[in-house]
Length: 254
Image 1 (cartoon, rainbow, N blue to C red):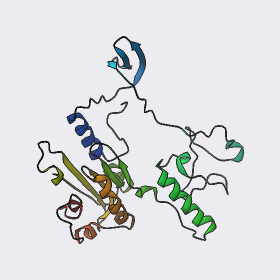
Image 2 (cartoon, helix red, strand yellow):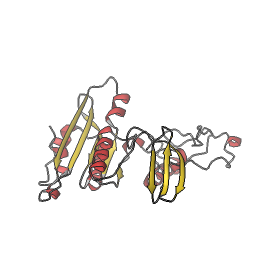
Image 3 (cartoon, rainbow, N blue to C red):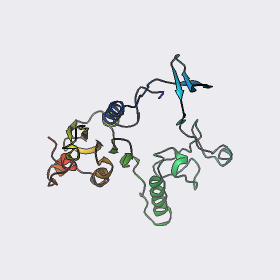
Image 4 (cartoon, rainbow, N blue to C red):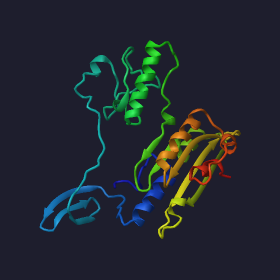
C-alpha cells in the first residue's frame, strides 16, 4: 500500500491492530509501496515500486486504486454547480449544491460512499424539500461502518484524532480495553478483541465507538443508535451487561 498504514480515515487503533492481525496470519503487508511498473516474466508477474523494491513470482495482481466520479460530461459548470478538483459535487449539510434548487446525494458528493448512506441522504432530502421538515439532514459524523476483514472492524462516530481536531477546547477522555473473546477460549490461537470509546465534554458524551475482533460487525449497529441519540458514558455505565458476551465490555469499561 502507498501509505504508512491501513484505513487512514479510521481510528489508529483499528488500523494498527488489523495490520498486526494480518501479519500474524501470514499476510505480507508492504507499506509506503507506490507501484511504478508491472512486468510479465517466466516466473510470473513482477511488481516494482518507486523506491526500487520488487515483488516477483506473482500469479495475480488486483488493483485497488480508488475511484472518481463521472461528472465531467454532465455540464455542471454551465449550471453553476461547483465541483472539487477530483470532480466531486460540493454540497452543504442539506445536500444543496452551489446552485439553488439543484441537490446532490450519494457517491457523487464524495461523502461516505456507501449504499445505505446514499439512500438515507435521499430520504432526508425528500423529507426536507417535500415533507416540510426544514432541518432534516443526514449526520455524516455518525455513520456506522464495518470492514469485513479478518478480524472484522466495526466503527461509528469520530476517531480519537478527529475528535481532538473538532473539539480542541473540550475535555476528552478515552476508554480502551482488550481481551480474548470466549469464542477462542478452547483454541490454541487466541486473537484479541480491542475496543475504544472516545468521549468529549464534562458529561463525557460518547462521540466515537471502535471495535476490532470477533462479532464487531454485529455489535456496532446497536451502539450506533446510542451514539446517534447522544449517549453519555454514564448511559453506557447504567446499561446492564449481557454476560458472557464481547459487547458487554463496552458498558463495563472503566
